[in-house]
Image (cartoon, rainbow over all chains, first blue to last red; front, side):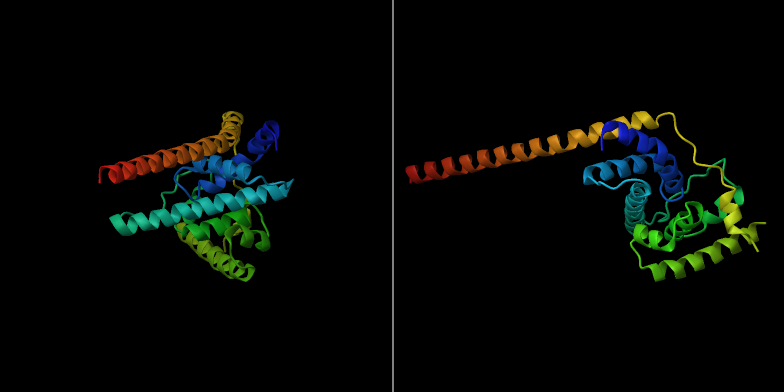
Length: 153
Length: 67
């Protein structure tokens, strides 16, 4: 990949990654840039949508590290483990408010499946889980999210 | 019952950022520089190790001579 190709990929994909990461971490911009850096360093030779799937996988791994670090520091210092969730003024308020009540893993699952429209197989790969587990967890997360949104109405 | 598909479909599309092209260039540069920096760090570590071993050897020789 050359500089121009990276620029094109970044401009086309970074907004989607940022929007996803804004649901999961405190600093979506930093994590987005780190995602692309790691993608470049790994020297992937894939093309098309496969590149985007790999980027989402790297971003999910980085977000997971941030959740784990947050949990570890919460255990040590007694602070809130859940990463703060940046409000997005342009998004629908009830959906955003309900998402905030889910766990980071549930948020990631829901976002990848519902907002990004990835198949269970792809979500499983991105989250490092079995496809059957994704199906069950996603069903529960969707039901929980729907209930939360009903309650807010 | 809430229609989640509809709720997600109504989300506005991801907004591009004016700084994206610049950020991509920075990442490209960082990825190009990182292996060079790593190699230099490895070389510096090796040089430091050689220096330390040399100093230890000199110390041992000096101790043996004075004994």
